[in-house]
Amino acid sequence: GTVNVVGGEAYVEDGDLWVRGLPVAKIGNSYYATLAEAVAAATAGQAVTLIADTTVTAMIPITKNVTIDLNGHVITDMVVGDRVFRFATAGVDLTIDGTVEGSGMTIPGEYLTSFNPSQTKYWGFVRCDFPRCSITLNGGTYSGPTQNGSMVTTRYPGAVPEDQFSSVTLN
Image (cartoon, one colour):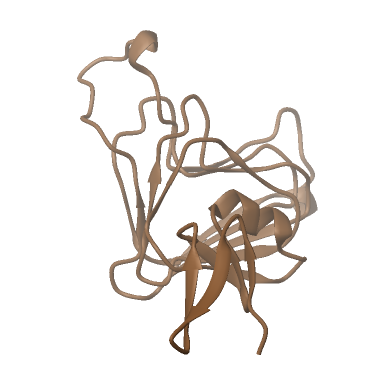
C-alpha cells in the first residue's frame, strides 16, 4: 500500500515502516505532524483520527463538515485568547468522537477565584459565531478552567430565524 506523510518522513528499515516527525493525526493512510494540518487537508465529511496526544497552540478554523476522532487521545488547549476549534463559516458540522476510553480535551491550569483580564488565557474548546452550525460531542472527558467563556459555545449577533439556529449535542 501507499502511505503519505505530511510534515514528516516515512522510511522502511528491516522490513518495518517507520515515520519520522512524530505525526499526531491521520486521514486514511495520510499522516500529519499537527492536528491543524490534518483538519486543513480533510475534505468535507472526512474523519481526522488522532494517533497521539497533542497540544494545540493556535486556533484551528472549521470550514467544512469534519469529524475529529480522539481515538483514546487527549487534546491539550494552549490557545491563548480563543478556542481550539472556531467555525469560519455558516452551515457546517463538527463532530468530536471521544467514545474510545481515554479520549478528551483539557485546559491546563487552576481555576481563578475572581476574573482578572490579565490572567485570561484559555477560552474553551469550540466556538461558532454563525447560523446553522452543528457541534456534536460523542463521549470523552472535557475539563479545565475556562477563564473567559464556556467550553463549547454558539452565538450569533442579532436576530436569527428559528430555521437558522445552531445546535450543540452532547452524547
